[in-house]
Length: 361
Ligand SMILES: Nc1ncnc2c1ncn2[C@@H]1O[C@H](COP(=O)(O)OP(=O)(O)OP(=O)(O)O)[C@@H](O)[C@H]1O
Ligand code: SF4
Ligand SMILES: [Mg+2]
Image (cartoon, rainbow, N blue to C red; front, top):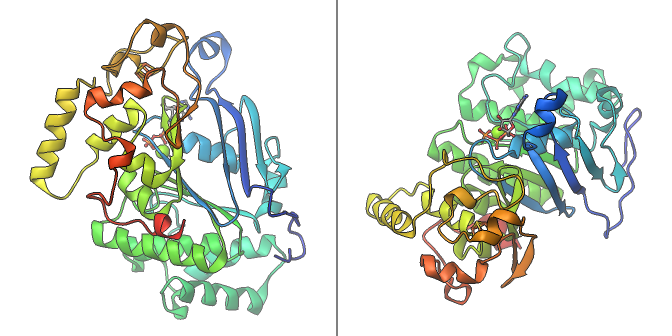
């Protein structure tokens, strides 16, 4: 990509990840009490290759948005590093980051609050272009082309957000993120606020744009089924720690971590009979609920909810280790069959829709 005037030219080699997160720790607040509380993000590391989508999944409060905010510079990490195309951007100020507008962009969850109601769509779209030194008719032309690329008419530039539906607004938010032709996009629950059929349309649009432009996505969602649709790899987060990571098909069809098993079993499915069977299987496996007691600071965070927990789980934090093709942070991953989890060799096309990300992998 040629960086226009005012934008940062980041050179990348094929071997350089588009995004690299290393040993990220984020603590909110200050003072002794905050230091004693468990961090919101606790030593998280993963990479995203150019053109790759990594799905970050976990239940509410697991820390997904906090990682997104640390990448975007909206929350300063306590320690660890974030690199964009090999350049350390961890400590960059927001002002310095405005020069990254051509490289790193975001789409947020709520299409109603993320667009300024007092500005026309055209004004909203030319704003990031101005940071790149693109102004006047050239910027308006790019805004019109951006709207067409997301399936909206070019004359939408003269209209206001209130004149569009939720799905159309999310398309506008995507156009705003992509108008500067970035290489890395953080998508924080971009379809959660949309109805099911609009979700599918927006996910397909994102997959098409990614494939056409070679974009790298950090795709945040709480539903492994949605993550599977768009991603090649997934990172499963619980209480700020990575529980499991690997190819999305393997992780979603035959999880190797008890938390991923619980997350998969809890995912909503459109067929009531299957939903009932999943609930029964989950109850039989003995998983605790999300509100279970806080874990000890030293061991595995899933102890209070885990039917496989033993003494070592309380005293030693399990490291991520390779278990049948994915990495799982569990002392007893090999005992998952006791919970009725499918063996990886049994995994095949499952009940979830076939993922675009998986198909492309
Ligand atoms: N500004 C903040 N100040 C203090 N604590 C915060 C702040 N933002 C988030 N947290 C805490 O950090 C943890 C992770 O929050 P985060 O928003 O990253 O979770 P999430 O996985 O994105 O959840 P959701 O799926 O609900 O969006 C939670 O315990 C949350 O309460
Ligand atoms: S380390 Fe222990 S408590 Fe944690 S998920 Fe594995 S078996 Fe369960
Ligand atoms: Mg969030």
